Image (cartoon, each protein chain N blue to C red):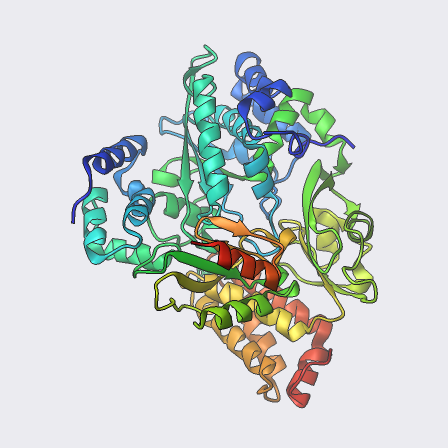
Length: 155
Length: 420
Ligand code: SF4
């Protein structure tokens, strides 16, 4: 398990940018995750060494934040918001539909590893509810037809 | 009314520095850095009377004034862009549509509190906003408005964009500081306040996105001018977020102190479905006490809402029509806070989970006699007994829903189903 010289150079850049070594941890974990797709035990050890903290510290951080993935997930991470404003606009039926269509429950991944489905707390898009986020993109003002269109369009 | 925060958002490429400059942008930071002392900047902000837009409503000038002046430690300015309170989506508009308005506010604020390093802490889910801000910061460096010796004034400032990773609690300022330091976002007890001991144990000032975005206008036109907008002690305009059962949801910039009724019916176009009646409104994001339909004549400002038994909070207005089951709505809200509790304080960690379970049980038709009282009692025991405001944020809505819609909870328990 190693990273490219280019990657190591970027890590060096953040170390120089921050006033304190430990503070590079969140950006570093993001960098590793975007390279690997998720954070393995080895990746955690690498991050611990770079940030100068203990492996237990890293474990604590990785489990605290919901956006760090401790296990492999599908190519597309579907996050459906079910918080109040989205709920009022029908997020329950959207979620139900996606579950049925993909044949998985919340937290599950399709056998072909294409989709992982989770629910998420408030995406900050309540004015265009219901909303879901797939990887980095928001999809707003959803209805069942729109959801189908979106899922069909993903390669 | 003159728009302050949203005047640029409809321009083509409003996020680019050239569009911002052509609209008169970055003149205020020049004015501040070249013609004013840091203390004069703070004075001007004090004169404006502006109160923080992050939820607590603390006077901004006062907060800036707390940062020690003759102190050899480094000072830090932090912009809280961790917008996560359910019902709130106003900061995202500034971040995505007018990032330079925010950056200019941060430069002026950093100058005022004598900081040479600033952070924007943006919530992890706002990937689009992150990318826009990243580009905007690079443009600002290119123009020489950030970096060494800004505009030849000798003032240096670096700005780091720091991405959160999905934890609502990191919007609380002390948790946010821990998160910047590379730790779990656990709130700290106050005092000491961040102005004395903040990130890396140095004096730190933290303001919300919307608050900082007001600064360029205050410096350009003066605190006096700003203080005439809105109402006494509640000055300026506000970004109101309308969501839920409303025809035209969205973000509206209007003066503080506008009647809630006017917002819902004039600006928001009224109920989503014409045959439905207004049942309840949460005026300030899901953590504040709910209002009933007959309370909508309240004025939307810090003091009026407090007098009405609720809070302005983030002005995330969630509108509910008479199709909504209040037990279910309370459950949704509670589920959120139970999920987001950091777990440090027993009343919050155990209490939020307990309330969630009780509400789930009622919802499923398995509620038992006395559950309503128990629920209220648990909430009451969280209130005021925790390190950070999340405990109160979880307890207040529950108590208010029970107080105002008690018969629905009772109906749920005795009839094993909804009233609506
Ligand atoms: S009130 Fe809740 S979120 Fe705040 S510190 Fe205590 S346990 Fe953590």
